[in-house]
Length: 372
Image (cartoon, rainbow, N blue to C red; front, top):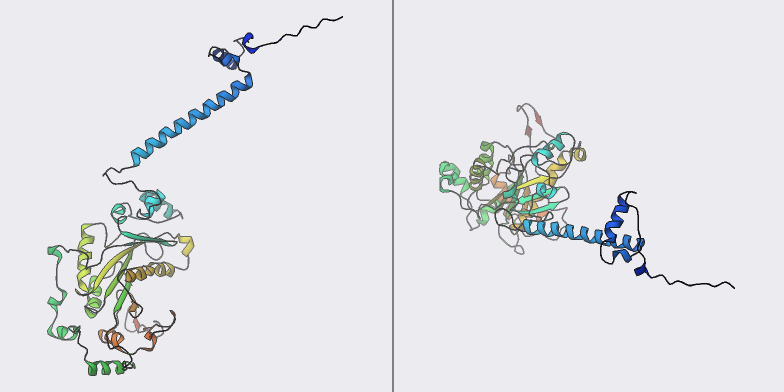
């Protein structure tokens, strides 16, 4: 018969010996064998253990740098809280992480966005109340009733008026001269409020874009509008309508502050004057042939400013250019007359009064009667 001997092999009784001249892997095995209990593991067990140790090390390494970054970034250099990249108070450049020079180079090469001259003052502008929309961002500065103008910049536009100007422009009395107002309304084909309509002046809210407009022209139009508006909303952009970058006129420098203080006082002390700022996110290829889109986008900021200043459904909004104005007499008529377009209960599309006039370009000989 055949005698069979069964041998129970215990891993503790087996010592694996490998040659060390076969490569780095064999050297590693020999080194591992010297670690207590490692020599008792199979090759598969060793592989699993090494993978676990590598994963643990990776996690520990990443956690260290993550915590270090949080601690280092929790405060800024000036001691303030660091801002998250999604923080709406940050400028578009800060949120994108694009420098002024790089973004301008992108623009010139048909690239993404335009923030010319942005880095000069973006930290200050980023502190302003702002609203981000798909086409760009609005930054809202204070109005003239919220600022203390430096004494050296204070002036009274009415100080240089003639006696006739004072007679025509000092008409903001709270007392309504019924007979005078009836004649005024009739001269424009408007009715006069009947007994069922309140006899009071409507508030006027004005909106215009502003850029490199002549100071003399602004003085002329603001004199006609002196103390007649509740709010004057002016919006400046750092690009032209065809997205050519330009510098801020009313932000970011001492000269800009002086011009802003001058502008605050032109429309009279009863009027809240503000200059707000628009930065577009549009590219040239998005508005090619439709440059007026930028103007439409920019004018959207007026509605936000008017809302900030308490506009009501019975108030009147006037959208125009800074170098254009209705006559003061007509503005007074809009305030009190029975104007069909301003009657309550209408849709948002109907209550509009359009103005048209002769446009003189280059010479009075070149009048375009059809242009409004």
